[in-house]
Amino acid sequence: MAVVKEAFGKTKDGTGVTKFTITNKNGMSVSLLDYGAIVQAICVPKKNGGADDIALGFDDVAGYEVNSCYFGAFVGRHANRIGGARFDLNGTEYELQKNDNGCNNLHGGDPGYHKLMYRGDTAGESAVYFERVSPDMEQGFPGALEVKVTYTLTDENELVIEYFARSDADTIYNPTNHTYFNLLGHDGGDITHHKVKINADAVTESSKELIPNGKFIKVEGTPFDFREEKAIYLDIEADNEQLKNAGGYDHNFCLMKEPREYGYAGSFSEETTGRRVDIYTDLPGMQFYSGNFIEKENGKDGAVYTKRTGMCFETQFFPNAVNIPEFTSCYLPKGEAFNSKTVYKFSW
Image (cartoon, rainbow, N blue to C red):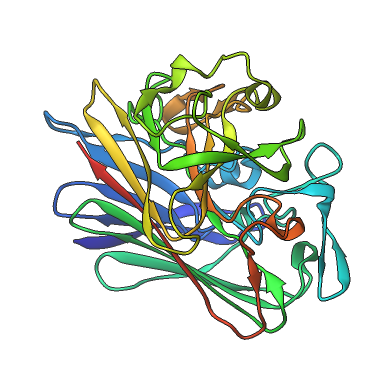
């Protein structure tokens, strides 16, 4: 096990960016950037030798400075959507950037956590951490927030993502990772023949703007039933209002476990490569996003990413939970430590 550090270029303001690559005994590696705490590459061996990078992304810093699709992104202060781009906390209303449909907030707003520099360093031979302080009222959220995310690659082929935060004032915190996967390789094209299993018996019902309204839809008998593994293409074009609103899957699945209990969230696999990823988390929800809004992105190694060439499995508190009391709260009291863990376990 080893971590290699190398220069990855400079930002437009001249700041040097470092890439950290962790490699385990099985030949699997994960590359990470101190710009945005980005997952830049996940290289997984092939059965007959060699390896494929299965994470969509860019070859240079300039690509990540735009990165409108959030490839590999560490997302905060609040992942996913907040209806009306506002919330109340302790009797005070906070207004956020309306960066989604002109009226809602998506992934916290500007500056996005995926477009900021972090202090990065190794933590032993198998882990890298990134940290910074998010100032009070950055993106419109209260409290100066100590933020840390640690990535560990184990010899069991697990990518472990651990989140830590502490605020000097009451606030909210809902981090996630926005890596786009394609088990055929980042340049492997359409992902709809991948098979997916999600340990959820309901999804949160959403408006046309994809804002949860506090209601739940049981997955049984719907295109959202992934309790048994099935190929994405089977139902993604079904005559279903929720699917049509999102142009495919872009929905929060309510995991069948206690809200902060660590447990199995789901899995995805690809038959021709034999690759499989099992997902575990202590968060209550997981957004399955089938890459419906990728228009045309010039990615790594000359690849061109388009609609449904990558997919995300974003563990999270439910979207818009700050405005729906019935949802598990992402409220973080002053001085209290936030800790969370999500694991992606790879096999091939």
